[in-house]
Length: 121
Image (cartoon, rainbow, N blue to C red; front, side):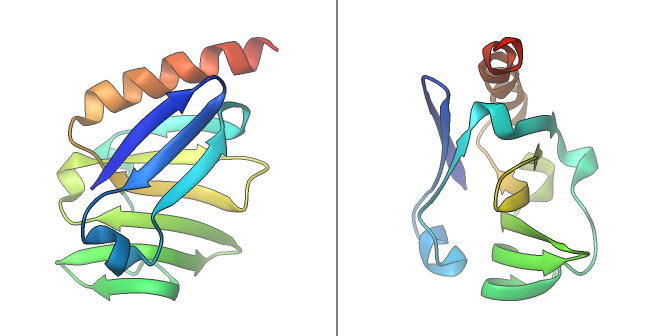
């Protein structure tokens, strides 16, 4: 699971608990200006996540870590896809973040509010 913190125009996706071990990462920091879109569970890709470098992938159990697919890096931390959001990025090392959160709708609203000022600037 991932917790999201927003301070100014910086969004930090903090990987919680043992997921740090599986994802081999404790956080991903993104400028709000890099967030292009935030979608819900309906946008979570199914099937093969890509080439895992580094991370954990057990089909139907967990996808966590950095994955290379179709020319871009995606950070994953998902056990329950129904609780995931997909954050599309531009101008960042990752092209997408696919992360499980405690309350997907609240996370989407919080991120939408955070990126509004960044788009005006």
